Length: 166
Image (cartoon, rainbow, N blue to C red):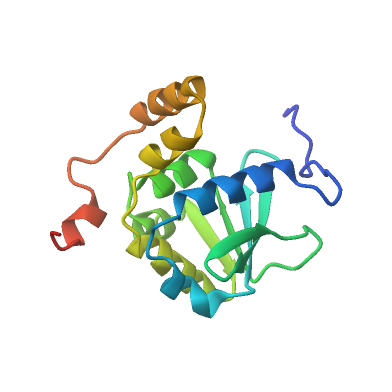
């Protein structure tokens, strides 16, 4: 028996978790070559749902940035998975194709949009830890380092194998 509510909590028109995610993502993407990949996705809405927890993010692509989208708006794409698998995706500890093919992350909605989003994220070469450490208070940065150190890391990431040297 779970003590968590079945439905995501409602904060009315203000979504503090969504706002935090959008601010961190947009900050982390500063200086990244994301504009060209996101341009054709302008206006698309994405819902990220965590399985096993009553949390979801409703996002909208606006140019080369993300915005919080109202929960009542239908999403073009919904991505579902466990928090640990989203962390593995964001930290590049695992290849996105592996997470989707093993059905640890699932995609529903417009297949073309979902594939374009996955390819845009896959094409990025960023360091999430460095970006998060730059914007988080020292205690939170230490917690992030400790949590990410517990994630299993493959000896050679499939993403790194396919990248051309710079």
